[in-house]
Length: 344
Ligand SMILES: [Fe+2]
Image 1: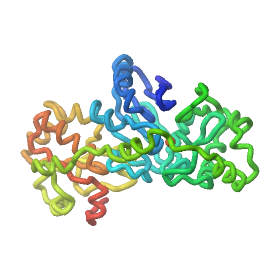
Image 2: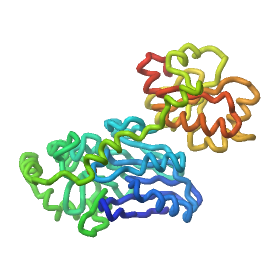
Image 3: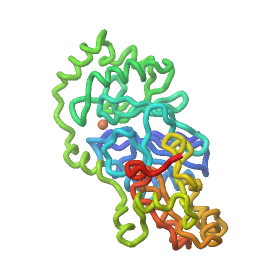
Image 4: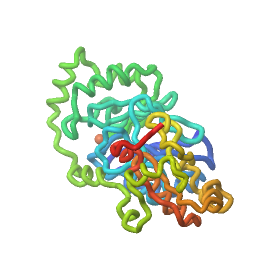
């Protein structure tokens, strides 16, 4: 396994890079915009293909690297379903997994620092974002934070993990890098409380000033979508209504780019075929499944995903590969559901 803990000195943020092998797929957690060049270089040095970039929550102290990594590597951006970010490629909730080749993260919803805070469990280690720090916990006084929620996330979820579980936090301001659940239970001063009320009392009296980047970072982190309207203006997209009218006919090919887990959870458009986004590069070039299908059929190929972001990138890649009749289903399954489109 490849595991790297990277540090941004400006915001004291930890970023984690994971892969099962050299030459394989990689996943990154909480990348920082200013450090994207360094991540790209490391990916190249380790011969890794970045396929997913994941944030634990909407950050207030730095600008996320998710949008830049998506633009430069075509990776899938992942956040929790509560996040108010305009467009992320994939949204996850409690009990879901985030999968790449050879490894899988268990998704744990741990609100409190913010209402969209998640932790990710990977075998013997847990990435706790700003929910649990080494000898500290994340503040709860902005972005719909709640000390009560955080108490529950800590005491009813994270602290119930096996004591030897390694704790990898989203920040550290003192130079610590890793701890364990047992160590934090014993020595984290914020966790030495006897009741939720005692915890709330501590958290409500921290009197912290706002992070200096907050007014810039939060709005920037909420807006990182690709412009799907641009594809629509170029005549390379169809809306849900038009798409619904196509179901059952044989005029077009609908292509689902989502992962297996997303298909099972949210349903599939009847009659569509499955071609996971991570395999797209091979699929849209001569010899690839989609390329050959498009050539043989002469039909339009309509790509869809969860929110339209992956499919917008796919339309570009497919056209570059030679599939001229590639189109985007604007807004993805999210918009499809809202328009009452059929799913199976
Ligand atoms: Fe945070």
